[in-house]
Image 1 (cartoon, rainbow, N blue to C red):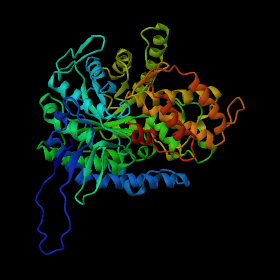
Image 2 (cartoon, rainbow, N blue to C red):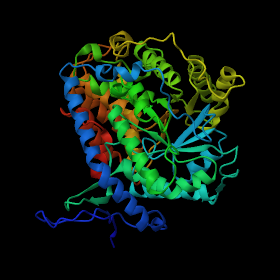
Image 3 (cartoon, helix red, strand yellow):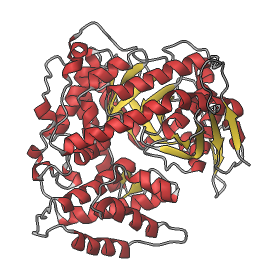
Image 4 (tube, rainbow, N blue to C red):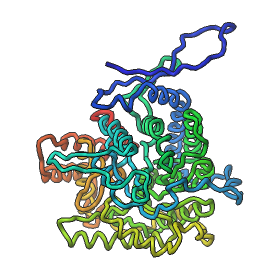
Length: 557
């Protein structure tokens, strides 16, 4: 049976004007109701979602339309730039962001991961300072994952979260929630481009549309947990993904103001950390901080999506924008150095924390040699970030926390951050941010095979509802799969020739795909056939889908 909630509010008299059919905005639940789903999808929560969509869904569509125009401009040769119309914001020295809220003063190591019960418990027991509770790239947005992830968070904050594995192993949170040994929770909702098809928004004109994934994830978590989070000594904190400019940040800021007024908490209670993971946002870091200054805690260097954004934005701009094998695109190549240096300097200029990115290497508890190699690589990565002035970093596995923490402990000394390092010596130009051609490196046949294999295996995992997958001792999520498939598309489009002399065309890639698929280990219930179909659509067709997850979600989830 469908569940709906209606938003009602006073309206001005229409006695002197023609009348038209009017409808109360409402949210309709069309997804199947599972155990305890009614605790999340309450009439009051749905009314709040209806209010959010009534006020902000139209602006969201405007912002998405603006993204399309930006992509057309980039394809036609117009590069991103520092905006002349906002130069006064960058020049004004006096403004600062709100800074860390309670529980966010020390962010030296943050663990990221999905919100299923087992992973949530592991994160809360990890010893990290912050848990990025991820409803975005590390979560496959099945209806079950979306709502049961909200239940995990609800139970965690109530102190009742537990899990029993199919083998009978019991998992519980070992420390009091809100205590000094439990990470502060920062939730990441889905990006603006994603919808939640299991909820329908009916607007005042009677039109029906899928709900916004961003508003659903934010709205349900905020509505149910904001007051409890404040009681626990922290607050409703969020990571904001995939922004492409300051107007998208302004939209979030307006949403935050409305939401705090709606449940009668003080404005500025919310804290947001923005992921700078698009080339467009890299040129508007200060403006993004400015728009969110009442609620902003910092910026994060979302490295994998940033690389994906570079490929996507310049994919048809010629061979000088063709990147080599994924493993050769390190954080030390010039355009990535420019991006991270600018991020730290921008944050510290405005009193914001700069949070480093995810190293993809993960340990293997069954193979000490792999683990040793992973720890060495993670240590080097985190040492670079700490030396550059970052105020914290991400890891994807609890075993990496001591290694990462040691590097930041050394850099911090007695402090909890490095805001005192203003990096005033940093001066990054547009040309440096766009210096793709200096990367060098090669495209190899093994790199092509690797991209196809990683994308296929990840997409298959995602289709089964697993959004973070350990593949060949690397943690893969939607962002790394996007790099893999977008590189393949670009290599085909630009008639790239491998180091071995092989031209990368659709015919050869069809052979590669067949060989990779033939070597996969199949099992009952696998989704490899669907994954092959998705990969073919997003990597081998003439058109380039902006995100592989959009079409795959519409068809298969």
